[in-house]
Image 1 (cartoon, one colour):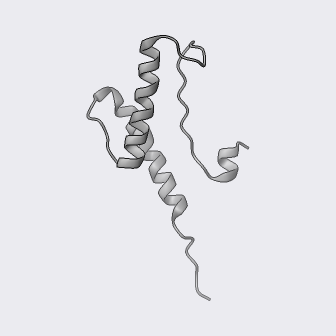
Image 2: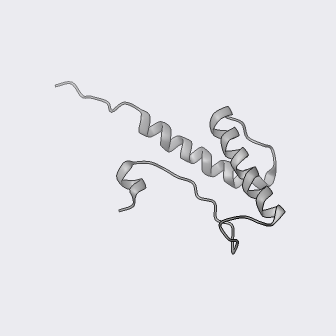
Image 3: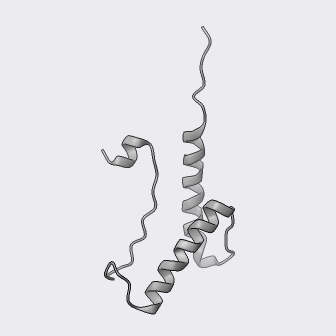
Length: 80
């Protein structure tokens, strides 16, 4: 069982092909930093860029938001 499942948490991991952990190419740095800006803008400002290339990332994040909201709902109690 993964930590995510055990704690009922979600995560998002960005994997950049065959690049080293420390990004040295300007295009790789830009893509990495832009994804971070997009992430913060989505989660903190509830904003999505209209760029069609980002459609999949926003769809994935909206699903994560639904899971997050679902996990934060109080457990309903039944009366006896």
